Image 1 (spheres, rainbow, N blue to C red):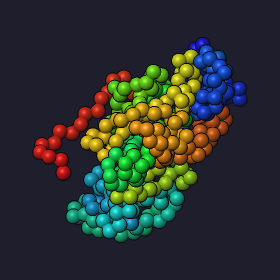
Image 2: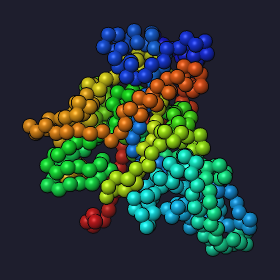
Image 3: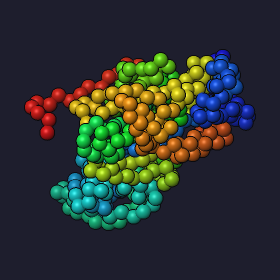
Image 4: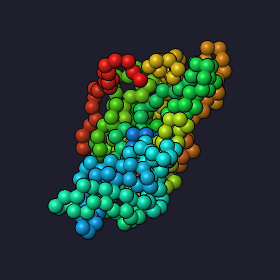
Length: 384
């Protein structure tokens, strides 16, 4: 069976479209074939809520009088990048305050979404066209021109789980890893995860509308470290970090319920974001993809104590979600870093928005790469 975006949108307009979450379709797949699902379901909503360090916002403050070319800029004491133009800057999620390494860009972004007031300090050398040399004032999301989230790398298509074989605690972006395989952490929403429900990105590309922290945003490019060449399991799904998305949206439209700053002990600041993507069920192949279950999705367990974080085992998300995994004869506790509760909430919201016509569907204006690999940085001498 073959459907088009136009046909699905017409069904939505008539109030006849069947929109389900990916979890609902995964359960349906235990009784129905992909062909039957393709005939019955029109759109499947996916979602994730997890730490996405490679995120940030462009902010335009507006010009003071007289003008100031902002070259050194901070908000609440956190440096932000001002090398863009006179009054544009970029807030990087992982940038931190020199006086408080537990507070950084992620906190600024969350505060802006919440409508909180921040202290802006800016300095410049003074020029003929921008003679002012400094400014100090209070800003919030309502008294600046624009705040546009542009995230270089979000919504990983799977991600390795982490453990630690050493005799000491390790503090990482995958959380605190206890010694001697004391725990395993993971950070993907499994069968709800957007790019695991469309592994070949048949419906996701440049211009795809997405739910980003409560706002309607878009895929603006492939994410950095986009990789199509990762090993796959028998169901054709990558068993490690593969494709990623570059996402953009209006921060002023975001909902504080779906954005949360975080500090990982001895690692640094990050930002938890809610991302959701609806997938139109255009044919039987897409129906098969959105039917994937946690039992079929596997990831690699990596040992963060060894150079290069080598994979030491493969495990399904059903096993990870059970709370324990057996590794080398030892029963090891597992813990998610992403929130399944939040992901489910996003998928349900998106389901209602799509069904009501509030979240328009359209094909991508351009596909993302079919083939791409990630290259490592070559450094002379020993690593420090």
